[in-house]
Image (cartoon, rainbow, N blue to C red; front, top):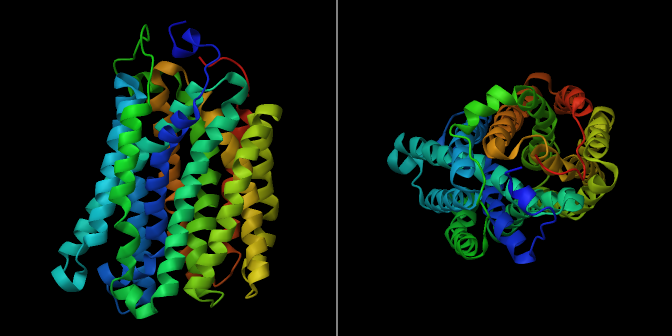
Amino acid sequence: MTTVEALRSEPTLIPRTLVAGAIGNVLEWYDFAAYGYFASAFGRNFFPSTSHLVSLISAFGVFALGFMMRPIGSIIFGHIGDRYGRKRALMVSVSAMALSTFVIGLLPTYAQIGSLAPLILILLRMVQGASVGGEYTTSIIFLVEQSAPNERGFVGSWAFFSAIAGILLGSVAGVIVTRLLDPAEVLAWGWRLPFLPGIALGAVAYVMRRRLLEEDYTRVHFARLPLVEAFQTSRRDIVRGFVIVLAFGVAFYLAFVYLATYFQQVDKISAARALTINSISMLFLLTVTPIAGKLADRFGRRTIMAAGVAGFAVLSVPLFLLLDRPESTAILLGQCGLAALIAAYGGALPAALVEMYPRRIRCSALSFTYNASMGLAGGTAPMVAVYLMGATHSPISPAIYLVAASAISLIGILSMTDRTGKPLL
């Protein structure tokens, strides 16, 4: 074998290397969460309309556009990762994200520069989407490749953990801003505050990666055009991976992006209260995810993922009925129920995807698969949910959407080969 795994059958992941590999996810998902939480402010400042619903759908449309850029980013950064190393791809992606996040915090609004404002915002979101297309999947691959076979589920779950941590920070930032400022101040300028620190976090991530990440690519035979080879040799696994990720994208972005708006518009609770509930649920998700990764090492990826997806199919409607109540306790129980199922799914998913593809085309195949699926399902989930609620006026309409996506993903999970603990190809 000419792979890194053959050279190091029992690699040991140093904690500081784990942090360096995962820290970029904190920044990437902090920004995406902050944008989702302040979607209403973005809608009014950059897409003014006589209809608040139209402005909100426009803002979520830009959110979806960022996700649509993820497959393009996956092609770019997947090629870099397979041809020039995971480290280089990770350094470029975090730099692009940090700069674009900072600029969004300084961006003039529609009232100040007219139609140029939404155009620049769209371009920046496209850069961010492409960056995320390389960051998350490359960090998953780096971490799992560096870990021992019997710990890949647990170590891989820390990539998801760091993404959750970033979203939690975005939620906390939203809570702080909405508690310290009145709604008029948030709309006028307070929405900018969460984006400005992005440059500092990006600088820390860049320096850590440059100093701490190391890879052994001696004797590794690279594919000349890894994505082309991936479609030639791993077409079935690419389709299978795409199907497996679908429900995860829908569930995650309904639960932790759309619901922040749902609580305010449907349950009629304050923004601060909605974000507080969201933050507590996110903290619960943060706690359970590594446990799910550990369980995936013991019982297998397929078993844990199937349990999570089957839970969505059965429990989505009851959980959304809890979310439709005005009491904070009921809302929190509903969202924590979704979080537990997402943790089972997301904790086992990273290792399962890495084990699905061979080393020489892994970055390209996994990045394209994951990001194409997330772009289609995850990025559009908040916008679809807003549309369904507007069309049906039914609080369970987003739940029905999640049930349908879960049924599709369950087929993909049951058809996969579980390679828990086996050597990577």
